[in-house]
Length: 137
Image 1 (cartoon, one colour):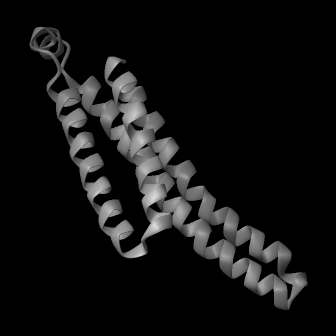
Image 2 (cartoon, rainbow, N blue to C red; image 1 turned 60 degrees about the vertical axis):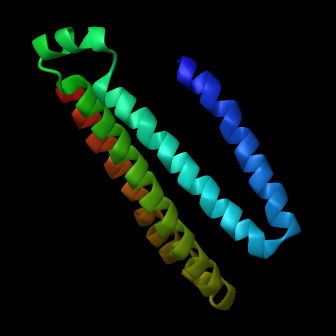
């Protein structure tokens, strides 16, 4: 919990700075954005490593209980995050195509919304996998 109290304001400050830099110079903004993303990736890897190893005193109870609880929770988080990102990309492309089709033929509304709904279903699959993983832990 303490980690989030430290990391969250830093993330907000970094994103605010990147947004300001992006408005000023487009050439330099891409470099700053790339550097910021790499720094955030490094921070995420540190947090993931800390979550996987845990404190030294917590290693013995985890070994006695099987130790799969933390791995299952991280797997559930990865499943939800990956499925949500995939669904966002799919909805972006299908939504844009649906709007383009609706501008030419408005009677295609039902078909277009079904396609966009199928793209949203990807996130539901990730949620189901996460629930199954948490249930096994």
